[in-house]
Length: 446
Image (tube, rainbow, N blue to C red; front, top):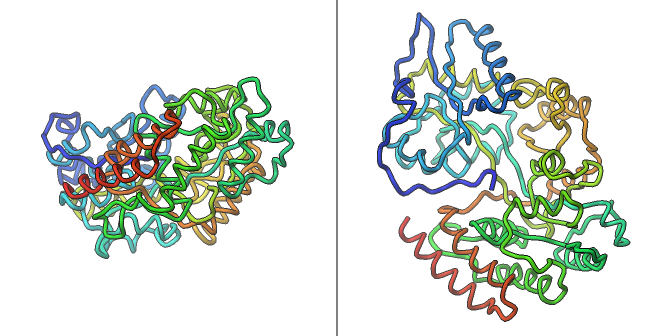
């Protein structure tokens, strides 16, 4: 779950590298310069990305000689085992990485600086997608800046579609069509699976959420206090999985799968479809043996909604005005200039054989988006036509972030998903009733 946030419940301070390097110290001067600490620098093991990051920081400091940037590498960028401890200990960097689902929590525990009065100086802010900006806005105040965003879609194997007599240019748009297509693909035999889904390590709950959104449902009520899974939409999700697994035998006999299992199946050419974000595609090619020309992406079936995620940066509550201004300038340079910077320098990425042309992240709107897409298209080294359906279809979908207490809720929903995929006689109504009660308890504990 690339961008799954964790609701933290512990607040024990532990010593960290930041304690030795004055993360978020409020000391904003060094040799007459404004000094900021930032995290999420790629680790040394990621040599190419690390070199890009270092080069971009160096270019920023040259263009802004009054700012000193101290970078901290991290893999992953945010470790859920230490995140709350660093927050509680006041040891976050001056500009620190967060998942979308962290924003409200960081504000709740009063560890984020209010940057509302400063964003007027951020050239790119108005060009960012409003729904992404809103994630870091709490009670009308701005506490962070989005850096990337993704949405879930349906990855499918064009070669298997052709073999099964399906039109690879017309992917399924409804769950009924997914079921019908999966059945035809599974009928090819030889161990071919039509559709696969996760059902372990909280990943089944994650995908249940995405599928529920696609049906127009929700996991929790609008006020975040009660479960909303024991509904016709929730039942439709589990019934569809049960029908494909046991009625059609289009999901294969091996279950309790996690992301690596499914990626391996797709990369080896034995899987027709699964839900994913676009970032899975290069993994399927570079690590799992897949081919870009065979892998296409469609919007979420169902046509009503899709799960979105992503990340951004927030500012330490100890930051001085000078540090906030410097941090915003750094974000603009590194991540928020169309066609430039660490994420947007597509020509540089292409030179180093990194995939260019994937449909996401898509951060900008209007002229900024047009420029970013133009530069991306000019340097594309993957078959962009394979993703056009995804881009077109996403415009009509409601974009929804993960529920509160996501990981705890996903653990509950995992049990429901795994049950229908491993037990032919699973009682869907009882599973949803049980899940609803457990989710209510999680939400009540806050």
